[in-house]
Image 1 (cartoon, helix red, strand yellow):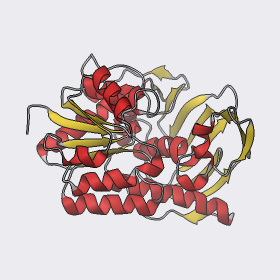
Image 2: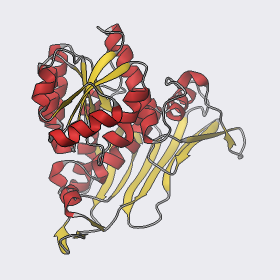
Image 3: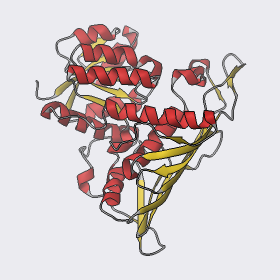
Length: 369
């Protein structure tokens, strides 16, 4: 393998999506990876991305990119319904692969990708960036070392802004069957951070609701039906014995951001930010034996990236790429990997099932990651 791991990114359009906000700047700043190739569906946009970010190669067909001998690893940063085919193709081509969350449109798709990656022996990572956020990593260690003592209860909220109107090329997310909505994305990232820190749920009662049942397409001036949920309420019991409540929502105006509160017999931890926990900028506060929260300084050992890594959306993605690179070089498994993704997909299925049935359900496949 070359000094740097040669990476190609599928979904490298510089004008839209997660890649130009997070993946592309993170890869360019990474000491582990070389941005060898970019791929979009049109050569014009691929070439534009190549020139802006200094990639060596540009492709308009991911199959051609995967066949190129100078590619060691691949990142898939596309709309969720498009994750499955290029990810499976990358695994079959023997490439290490980092695919964004949600891994698949359905749990079945995610399971297929996880099974194939294990069978082929390629390193695989899913974009659950909360697990690479320094504040969340530190919070997990504090809980495990007894900072709050026995966890009695916790509450998490993530209230974001969800517009009621958008251009027609962005209304595809209105269809719940496509797997990209508040339940899978915002709730997925937020509740994954909670599970990462305090452990799995054993049982849940939930409400999964679509409050905004129509969106306005601003360019067509048409109202379109929405089936994707925008408000999720979860209450339940943790496997460790504590209780938990969660409220995740995409509401029209002035969302309150992210807040995770963990209450124990010996103290309290609070993580908060104006964004989702998978973004940079999470603040961590704590109190032990008293009622005054104090800011907690995050030890340097939880920061993997160099000083040049851009802040914002790219930062925790850069943290993930560091871990991905280390796993590729060592041959050890990545965390979070595709199996982690399958577990989260299954948990989201349990949330939906509990809401559909209107009763408490046991959480399937509940185990720590």
